[in-house]
Amino acid sequence: MDNLLQLFLIFLKVNLLSTSGPASVGLLYHETVGKLVTEAQFVQAVGLSSVLPGSDALQLAMYIGYAVAGIPGGLVALLASILPPTIIILGITFILHRLRREAWVSNFVEGLAPAISVLMLFTAWKIFQKGGATDWRGWAIGIISLICMIFKVPERLVVVVAAVVGVFLFS
Image (cartoon, rainbow, N blue to C red):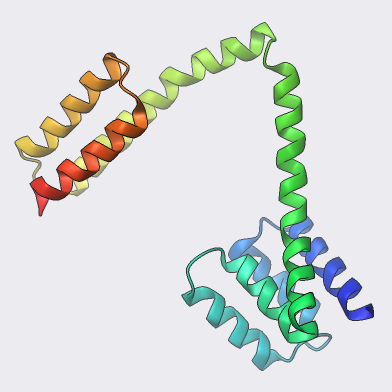
């Protein structure tokens, strides 16, 4: 029980003090190596979490938790890792839900939409420039997507159809 509480507090502290991911590895090393796991176990955990798909930080937490206290340790470390961001997101959602009817929030969102559109346009332009010569196929997909946006076709449908057409046109 003492190990589980120690695991919970360590992973809670690491996830409150860092942005998680690669940034938390140094802090996690300082907090766990020599106290809960050996350096060899930690290096093995970092290596394994790096090659597996998914969140490195969560996999690292589960691996160290499992090494210390088995399956309960893995679950406690995982819970302590996801608790801070979950509470923060829920708090922000609660605040935004209360503010959504405020006039300044709707004006902010209205002003944000064109700014994001221009940002996406510049990003697409940079991608086209880096990709080398862009022939008629790339321009056709872009123009058709723009027409779909003007006629308010659902975005998910446009993205999926553009991806499928791109696979056939560019392969």
